[in-house]
Amino acid sequence: MQSSLIGKVQKAKQYAQEPERVRFTQFSISFSGENGDHNVGFHDGAWQCTCHFFAGWKICCHTMAVEKLLHVMVPVKQTYPESLSHAEAAVAAGA
Ligand SMILES: [Zn+2]
Image (cartoon, rainbow, N blue to C red):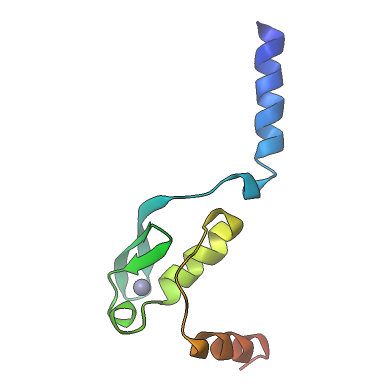
């Protein structure tokens, strides 16, 4: 009994180092932005956010931040505007 529980703890420790095993299918969170709280959601491979910017762009700093936090665990299906890759390149270049 004790040894089987130890085995589970060891496997959990191994799994916790392998985030690619985890795929969120949906979630809803509260994000504390600089100008207030926003509800960020992920459903069927697409993001949602209650902030004003998201309404026009279908992407925002909140969804991008959560996507970076969760890395491979969020299988995003939606396509982003081409201007986003230009913006990310500008940030990477120190703009
Ligand atoms: Zn937002």
